[in-house]
Length: 310
Picture 1 (cartoon, helix red, strand yellow):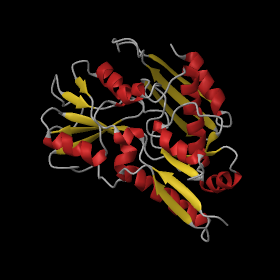
Picture 2 (cartoon, one colour):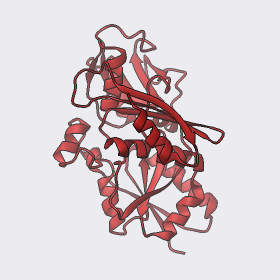
Picture 3 (cartoon, helix red, strand yellow):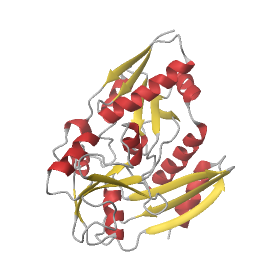
């Protein structure tokens, strides 16, 4: 049996997610060689400007600044599967690629990391929050119009160090999943004087796919498909299908201010959505909806959410 080559970005979080993937594969395929190939993406190289500007320079706001080079490696047969943080993956893929599986979802919430205080409510009026996500910027501005948003780039440890060491930031925002996967204890100080406040995902809606590690393959690669399906967490895959379909119906991409939360109760899939007008500076009135439907039909539930937005 030929080796299975796993493609990943080189950040600490990406490598941790690759390690999770490889461990899951080795548990099922003990006799198969698993090889890791680390690939640097455009988003990793261009840390000097906001992500939205990187995407614009590539000529397409949904180009996939963290995925394009991985797809090139897939297409060229250099890797058999790409490990992705699914919130970074473009909504629509080329026909030659397919998302075929996912690991069990980690917590999907966003986390506010504060310097000197411990919660969003305690942040003084006019505080500056660093985040490169327009979704987070819009929701924070909607909840706290007094806050100032500025861009911040870099991997998780770098962002925490910037918050600790630089006066321009009073707080930053990160995903709970990434912090947990890197071993941070959110109940204690992350670094000197930095405190984590988890924002309830039913109040501050996450990005589509946030907390989910997913796998992209060549659509005609049945060997890789079978390997990934063997380690896929089916409920998480249902949530992923629903959330990505919601983005597709909105014609939204990785850089569109959309929050979506989905959760499962028995055989029922629930979804909540919040959509901001990316062409307006007024965040006072996002379109919102909450729906429920059959877990067996995640795309239909997503369509219902889309059609109910108001």
